[in-house]
Length: 280
Ligand SMILES: [Zn+2]
Image (tube, rainbow, N blue to C red):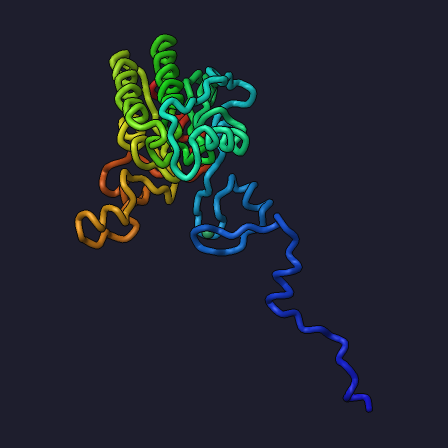
C-alpha cells in the first residue's frame, strides 16, 4: 500500500549537519562560542563579528596590518636563546626552544625592526604569543633593548606590541633582569623627548606588564584584552576576596585609568598614525 512506502525526504539531524561542515571552513569563537565562517573572520582581521572578541595574531600578521607595505626591515633576526641553566621542567628547555622555533618559524618570541606607519618611520617590536607564550627571556630583552637604543639614536618614535605570559622561567633570574634592562633603555628614549606607544593585545601579563608594556607615553589596548600581572585565580586566593566581573579586561582598566584607550583592531593603524603625526 502507498502509505507504507518510505518517505522521499530525509531528516537532517544536527549531528549530520555538523558532519557536513568541511574542515577548516568554520571556527568557533573563544568568547561567545558561536560558529564563524572562516573567510569572514579573516576578512574581519580575526575579530569575532558577533561579539567583537579579538583573537591572537601572529607577530608577522600584526606587522602586515600595522606597517606600511614593504617598509619593514627586521633587525637581529638571528639572535636565538640558549639553555645556559640546563633547565629541565616537563622537558629540557633545549628541546622546547627547538620545538617552538619550528612551530612559530621564529628564533625567539619577538620580532624587532624599523618600518613606516602612515608614512612615519617608527621602531617596532611585536611579541608573538605562539612562541612559548610570548615569554620574555634574555633574547627578547636584548632585542627590545637594542631596538629602543636604535630609536633613541635615530630620534624616532617607538611602538611595542605586547602579548605575553610574562618572564621566561626557564631562564631564571636572567629573564627578570630584562625588565630593568628594557625600562632603563626606555628612560633614555624618554629623556630624548621621543614618543613611545605601548599597544597591549590579548593577553598581556606578568613581567611584560610589570615593565615596558605599562610605561608607554600612550597605552592603547585592543578590545576585550586580558591585562594583568598575576591571573585572577591567584589574586582571589591571595586576598581571599571575589574579584569584580571582567576585572582584568581592557574596558575595566580604561575605566580605572590604567590605560588610555581601547581600540578595535580595524582602527588600530589609523589611531597609531594619528598619534605619530601629532607628536612627531
Ligand atoms: Zn564571539
